[in-house]
Amino acid sequence: MALFGRNKPVVFDPYGSSRRSGFPIPRWLIILMLGIVLGAGGLFYAEENYLPPRLTPAESQRLQNRLAELESERQRLQGELDRTTAEAKSAATAAARQIESTRTENEKLKTELAAARESVAPLKADIEMFAEVLPPDPRGGAIAIRAANFSNVAGQLDYHVLLTRDQKEGKPFEGVMELIVAGSRGGRNDTVALDPVPASFASYRHMRGKLPLPEGFEGRQVTVRVLDRVGGRQLGMRVLYVR
Image 1 (tube, helix red, strand yellow):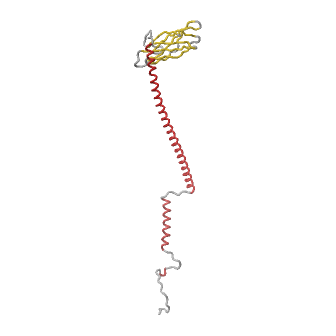
Image 2 (cartoon, one colour):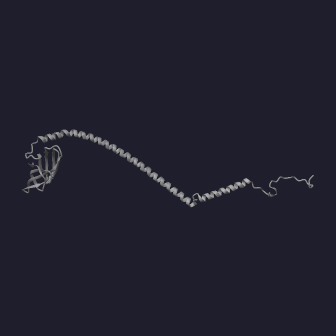
Image 3 (cartoon, rainbow, N blue to C red):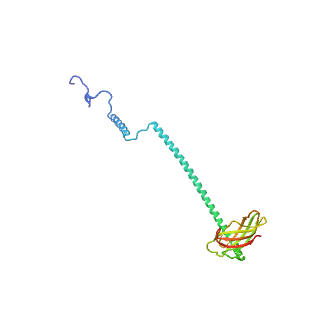
C-alpha cells in the first residue's frame, strides 16, 4: 500500500533537481572544443610573436617572379659555362695537335739539318783548303786580302773578295771593308769611295755583292781596305784591278 494512496516509480537522478531538461552536451565534446580553441590561439600567438610575418598575395607573387628570374639566370650562366668548357676543351685539343705537329716538324728539321751538315762538311773543307792554297796577301796584315774579282755591271761595282785571318780561335772579327774605286767619268779620271760593307768572320769570309757607282763612272782599279770600324784602324789593304 502506498503512503499517499498512489504507487509511483522511483527514478535515480544523480544531478537531482539541478538537471535541466533538453539535449545534454557531452563532456568530451566540450573538452575537444576547448582544445581546438586553445590550439588555434597558441598558433596565432606563435605566428604573431615568433614566426616570420606572412606574405601578402602580391609579395608572394613577386617572390615567385624573382625565383623564376634567378632560375632563368642560373640556366643562362650554366649554358655559358658549358659552352666555355667545350670551347676550352676544343682549344686544348687543337693546341695539343699543334704541339704534336710542331714536334714532328722539329724532328724532321733536325734530321734534314744533320743531313745538310754532313753534305756541307766536305764543301767547307774544300773551301778552307782552297783558301789555304791561294797566294798570300803580299802586304800581309792582321786581315789578309787573299783574292778579289771586280766588274762594272749596269752602273754598279760587282765585287767578290776573300778575307782571311790567322787568328782562328777566340772572338770573331768585327769590322768593315771599304772599296775605293779609281776610274773615269766623262773622259776624266776620278776616284770615288763606296759605302763601307760590314765584315764579320772567324777565320775567313767571302764578301760578295754590288755597290752603286756614280752616273757615268767606270771603275778600273779598286783599293780594298779592312778596318776595325768606320774611320778606325786599318788591318789590311790591297790594290786590285777591275776586269
